[in-house]
View 1 (cartoon, protein in one colour):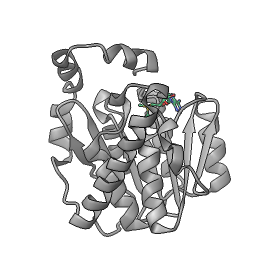
View 2 (tube, protein in one colour):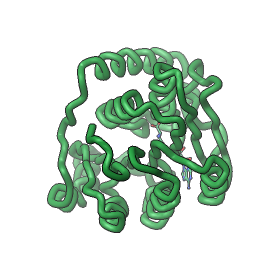
View 3 (tube, rainbow, N blue to C red):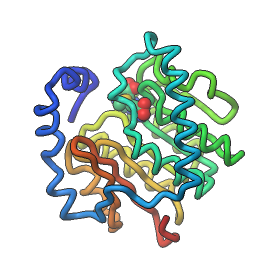
View 4 (cartoon, helix red, strand yellow):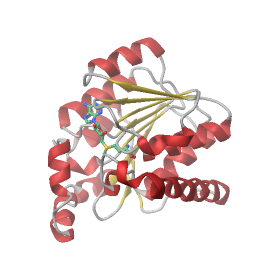
Length: 237
Ligand SMILES: C[S@@+](CC[C@H](N)C(=O)[O-])C[C@H]1O[C@@H](n2cnc3c(N)ncnc32)[C@H](O)[C@@H]1O
């Protein structure tokens, strides 16, 4: 629904205007999901994450001027915490994310994979010059793939053949969200996780949860919501 240009325009809205826009679908999310204000994340994961966030924002301070997007484009703290925890706990071999932005989510995922000593992150985007926040954390576990929307993701998924954790944070139009969810889901197996930022901008995530028959978990703030779907009957985190 929202293009980069529109999102940048939203950045200049007042807090009240933003709150009204983002809460549009909140009532729907509330009544259709296992709603988590603050999912239980053990202290060890929280401590590690806080260390990584401090490290990321120290680096941010050094390179802020070269960032492509405003800070508000970065994945929200609580969403990043859960993402970090899932990756540390499930030790995925293959993580795929769409939408690099400044690279906050990429950096967090890479930190978790680094501590796991296992796994590769594939980040897909349509624009060059993204993910600058990854900076000193870029290494052998990261592949940044820039290319045409949809076709690049399709080619990548066909090549790697599996996805253990998928994060959508790219073009939040209904059609694109559905496309990405379907494409990633086909490559998942029991124990995999599909996650999406900004699920309150339209009903794509909730519709997809319905289609695959999985009860979603939602972490919501007053203006943004993050959705999680677990594939199959694995233990619940
Ligand atoms: C909100 S930012 C992502 C933020 C990032 N996940 C973070 O935590 O820092 C959105 C990104 O999606 C990219 N994008 C837009 N449409 C896309 C598409 N169809 N496929 C892949 N990336 C896309 C934009 O170029 C931009 O880098």
